[in-house]
Length: 258
Image (tube, rainbow, N blue to C red; front, side, top):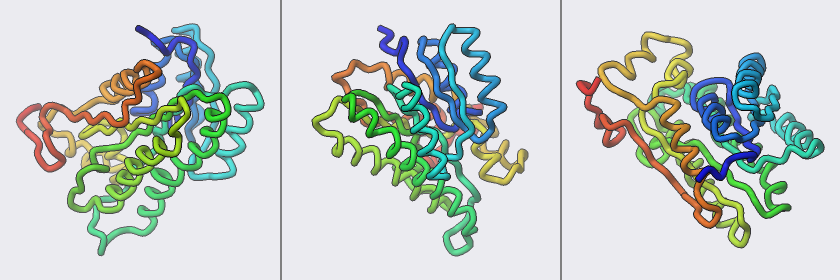
């Protein structure tokens, strides 16, 4: 059963990767889209394509989730125009660098904490009161297996994703007594722009992360998000963990699987 027809879905970081794939999958379900990202040209092109292909309503905005005032103004504008989301997909996130704590780049740490933790909080804090007011809604946070198991040289990224997991669980408690659901979708190795961003545009180094294996794709993760979002209203899927078949733990990868 498709329960997503006509639902309004806000997706952060929708210009590429998992965010773009989620936009495409929700559009196929007949959901209207509120797409935000820093790269406005990309989401405008995506919104136009999906509106034409699926006959849905789309709205776009250039929003940096680390800018608290910009996030607040954006959500206020949505509310003023009657565009309150039924589903919020907190997708915007990043990893920067791969270093031990004693050698870490403080700027990289700030970027990850500001985007992965504070950015998620800013958007959620702005949207949740609107959902609470009408007692309906679903927040889906894109986490990571890095929020469950640590790995070498990933301490700060791990910490941000552990925070996403904690926030997802705590939000569910805070929302007890309402009809609002909170879920997290935590993927393992997935081939997106993620590694290229982590390594400051070093495409060759990024490509080596996925060599000789079969990673998840953005579509795989979007498919999981749709499954979570489409659950019956009385069902709250707290957490969904997925890894490629060649991966069974962060440090265990079958490199011959590719």
